[in-house]
Every structure is written in C-alpha cells, then in structure tokens.
Length: 199
Ligand code: SF4
Image (tube, rainbow, N blue to C red; front, top):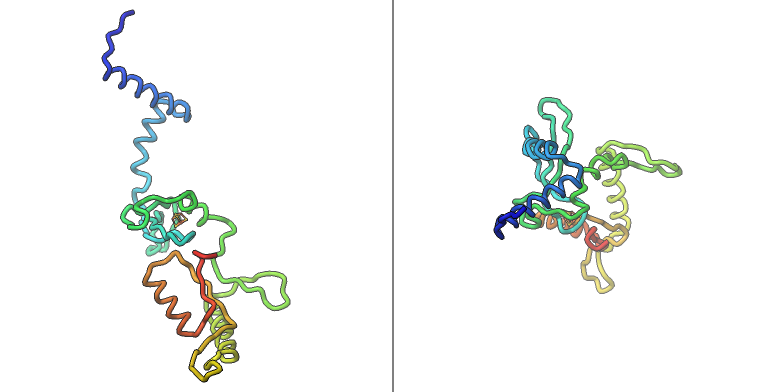
C-alpha cells in the first residue's frame, strides 16, 4: 500500500505511538489512563492547606501540607499529601527526593512525637509531658549556669561565658526565627552553639 505521509503527519503519528507505548509499559490501558487523568485534579479537593518548611536540611524548602478532617470541629486531621510550595522563593515548588518523601517521614511508626526521658539508672525512655520537659530543662540550665558561668576573664573584663552547656538548633527555619534563637543562646552566654547545617 502506498501511504502519502507528510513530515508533520509522520511526527504526529510517531509521537502518539511513543505515548501509547509508554502508558502501556506503565500498566495503563487506554481506559485507565483516561480515568487517572480525570480523577487527578480532584485528589486535593476539600483538603486543608498548611504551609511549612521541610525539616531535613538548611536549604529550608517551602512545602504545602494537605490534610483531611477539620480539627476545629473535633475531627482528627490526617495528612494525605505533601508537595513543594510554588510560591516559596527558595524552591519554587521543587523538592529533592528526601523532601518528596516527607509524608512517609510524618507517618513513620518510629517518629518521635513527644518528650521522652531516660531517668538516671534506667535502661528505657519514658514519655513525659511538655510542661515537665520544659520545667526540667529550665531547672538543669539554671543550676548549671549558676555554678559555671564565667563572668570575667583573667584581666577582669566582663565576658559572661557559659561553656558547660551546648545548644544545637534547627537550620530549617526563617531568618527571623534564626535571629531570635541566636539572641537566646548568646543572651545566656552559651559559647558552643551550632545547627544541623554543619552537622
Ligand atoms: S526538600 Fe531537600 S533540599 Fe529542600 S529542605 Fe528538604 S531536604 Fe533540603
């Protein structure tokens, strides 16, 4: 058979062939592919969008967390999807593989969700309340600072150095929060201060 095929028609035909072959290779028949394309836009309908920052590294990419369930009505909110925030100046919607897998991080059975304490002499961690955790941290910090603060150097110059406690802060944060965190540490005289970007 003699087929009259222009260059443009040939390209259209081969392009359609490649798309069909690719969908077939992924296990999509024509009907399934059409159904997936139809359902996709509705996946996030009726969800709550919450903007946040990826907690993994110092790039601090912006993310949007999509959850179902209205906690103001007493419903349990459940995160169903996390993606990059297209309006964020750092990543403009993109995420690296770690950030793209954030939902698994949030839902991991081994994720730490509340303060834990291993008491002196114990071989296991026990859950404690946030108030107990804050009280204990404040008590230990106050006692240690009172006992070890170096107020003056050998020449009598005021230095207010607290060298027996270190602080490790998160780097995935805004400039403003980082500024406040730095002021908090240096206001107390903490010398050993670092964040996860260098760890
Ligand atoms: S998405 Fe990747 S690059 Fe961005 S903050 Fe998270 S871990 Fe870092």
